[in-house]
Amino acid sequence: MTDFKAIKGFNVKSLAADPLTGGGVAGGTWASGGDVNTARRLQGSAGTQTANLMFGGTPTIASTEKYNGTAWTEVNDLNTGRRANQGFGLQGAAVLAGGGPPGVAITESFNGTSWTEINNLNTARGEAGSVGLLTAGLVSGGAPGSATTEAFNGTSFSEVNDLNEGRQNFGMFGTSTSAIAAGGEAPTTADVESWNGTSWTEIAELNTARDRAGGAGSSNSEGIVFGGTTDGGSTPVAITEAWNGTAWTEIADLATSRYGASGTSGGTASPAAIASSGGSPVSAATEEFTAGGIGDTIKNEGQVYYNSTAGTMNVTAIVYGTGAWASGAALNTGRLALGGAGTQSASIAFGGQVPPSTFFGETELYNGSSWTEVNDLNTDRSAVAGFGVSTSALCVGGITPSFSASNENFNGTSWTEVNDLNQAKSFGYGIGTTAAGLYFAGVVPARTVNTESWNGTSWTEVNNLNTARDGLGGGGTATLGLAAGGQPGPGIQVELWDGTSWTETTDMNTAKVATASSGSAQDAVLMFGSEAGTQKHTEQWNGSSWTEVADLATARNAHAGSGNSVTTALAYGGAPGGITTTEEWTVPNVVIKTITTS
Image (cartoon, rainbow, N blue to C red):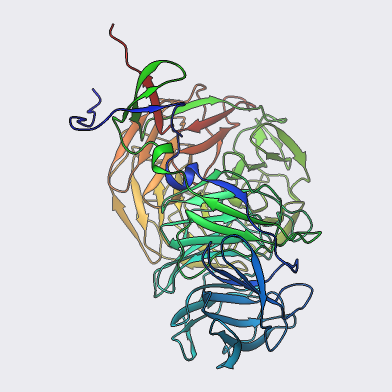
């Protein structure tokens, strides 16, 4: 029974409509602000929503403007005009570091009136990410595909630990000790890394891979990424995603699709962000993001209010951990032992077979509504592993019908053969991204404990699993992973990967063999379907224990799964026979109920 909050001593609010089902940032919206005087894109910025500073940009200019929350005013220019530059700080105490093209190391500081040249970056570059204040800033990545990170102490830059994945044109928010780098190129990616003041860690991916996005947020536990392009610079989008420290959620879009727009800096809280100029053609428009206010959001479980429009007394119940499977669109080609990658709304399915001997190279993309056939794999095969996102995925190993070490990379359009595994195998499992992945277990033809690490170019053998098996599932990243289920044995065994070695942990409740899974965090994985035990069975891992949740509608095994969290996932294909059925897993988070006297 729901344990409602005691309301004694509180007034029951009268609302014209039910409150938003996503509080805070999730219930935020964009509104028009004042236009800039000089339209541009790929500019630098600093400050807050009501006290912003914009400088440089494309075309290569030195123009600087201040925003007071209503209008932009031109002030003194940069000493060196440039674009694709990195800015951080506040309106009256800002830093511009580097820029391009070609990449430069020139750094200038702004005192509220004019720009002064100060100590340069150690590594010349543009198209990097940047956060922080005049006294404590961070510049990371940049063209061409750099992973270099430098910290600024108010006087000079010093090199600190690199990004795990070299990239440019990504959205960044936070502070010099707590930051997020999201998306970027090349190629366009959904990969996200979190900075803790010492090192970068790969975490849950964006729902939509993109580059040239803007970012705003106060730390690595809250922020937004907005706009950008999904194809390396041609097609701007309006998509906004919010990060809550665990997962990304799509929220209200920008009114104007654009890329290369400036955001906010200085550790500004994401509930008050700004998106200015940018796009192609270049726009002068400014938009302001404001999170849902106290009166517009559900604050806690048990909030009671009167809906004056409906004439009902309502109560809110917030539900976490309870989800359900619903029907999705059918695959065009039914098959089993296929590979998959991506998210619930942007997945890729590839390879597979229909017994006894028909092998497939067919590849399909899912957009949340339907599957579309795209370019085939170069090698028809089944029993493959897949990881990454729908626009940047790997297909690893398999049966052709002989055991294969083949490795192919999908760039959003076509497959390219890249460096092979060290050991040919099938029915293993892969996690991670095309820049940093892990492939483990499988059949070679004997079941194996072998684990290999992918660095974006080649495979390296690392420490083995404790238990040899195949037909397993898993989740997490190349540095913090999980392997679960498989055969032989009870099919419930679970191991954790810490970046160096595997350790046995809490078993699942029910055997899962030839299973599938979702989850890009080591402590949040969903496992579903099996050829052993209950074939519809679904379990959720929270980092310490497994919980049985709602079953699949269709019993299946040797299927594929996609998803970067335990709240949204996709199950498709599988046995018996090679089915086309797709199911979508969703966890609701708010229920509004009418109070009745019956």
